[in-house]
Image 1 (tube, rainbow, N blue to C red):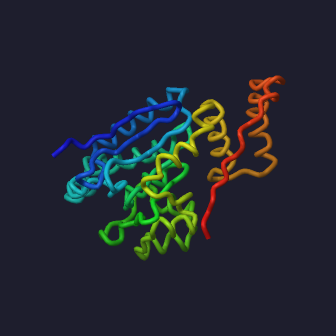
Image 2: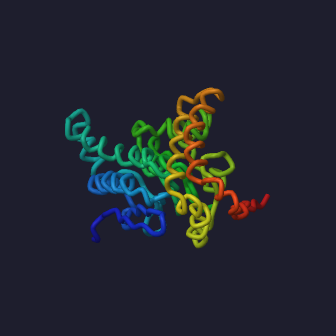
Image 3: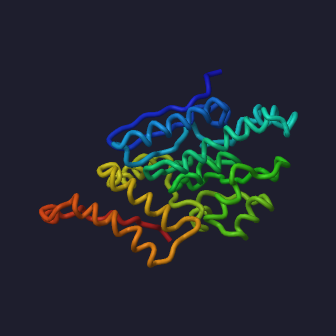
Length: 264
């Protein structure tokens, strides 16, 4: 069986973190979790990177933590080793959420449990229409972990979170977009082109993309801030960007925005 791993590549300002464990639906092993943390540290140090894509090999994004590790943790759940195992998995998607550049998860096929955590830890989630997004914890008779309820709740609120996590209701990619859990539905063979469009400007100006993401975090939280506070958060960074642009920079017109065409 091929070794489970996480691959890292970058191209023209965009970094790609790719889960590579397709024979187990890209379940996250302890070694994969450690690799994600290491890759994220490298990305934060590389200021040429303006956007990060989290994706997976094969036809399924991520089936969560490797069940072999979960089984080992269940043998003596209160032991130091069990806490170490679960914490290692948790840190991987927390680290994705802490990345300095904007992040996009590319969910093909589906995501369940900790796999859904990983997808939701990114700033923007793209899904295939037929993807199945499933909390999965209830069906496996374990309590959600890794901040799962918060990650789902940020998008769906209390009722939607209870439906997914407390009642075990899964949803398709199409429904996830309709309910606000995901950003847009994209057919699998169109995912790369959609990502290229989304990352175009961030890849061209990594410093500004990172600065905007930091301001989003500060302003929207949680907790969020007042409008007056938001003005002050943005003021210094905007003045930095104006000084960087310079007066002559206004002679260059920006490209026309790409408007998403949504079929009713």
